[in-house]
Length: 134
Image 1 (cartoon, rainbow, N blue to C red):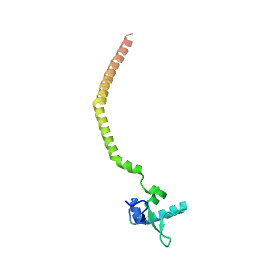
Image 2 (cartoon, rainbow, N blue to C red):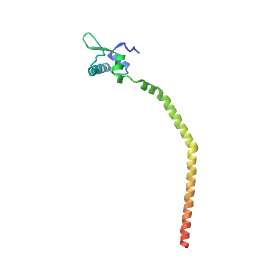
Image 3 (tube, rainbow, N blue to C red):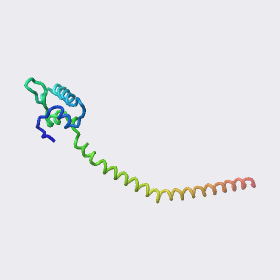
Image 4 (tube, rainbow, N blue to C red):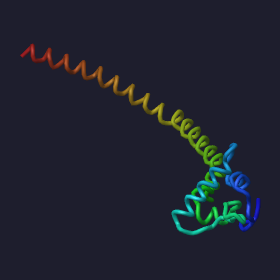
């Protein structure tokens, strides 16, 4: 990793920020030129002819922060496997507990509901027969 103040050619700087491809250096050069026009300040190194020749990682970080991944992104990428493992263990624990405690209770309640429905049918028949007798 180069120092923040070390001038790099545009292709090398593009590779440092994670760009790949044949024309990544030229794309970065155009982007730097456009940003210099937008802010009205020159931050790229120029050759004797005034042509953009190099740029520092520090300048890219300062003037084009959207090009560099943030530390939060790096932290998120590092923690992602751990979080996924914890999520997996949590899901397995929930499945086990549901299988051990919740499903038997639901089955017991369903059995009671079935019995109550049968009793209700009997009571309804009894009421109908009692009304017929009156």
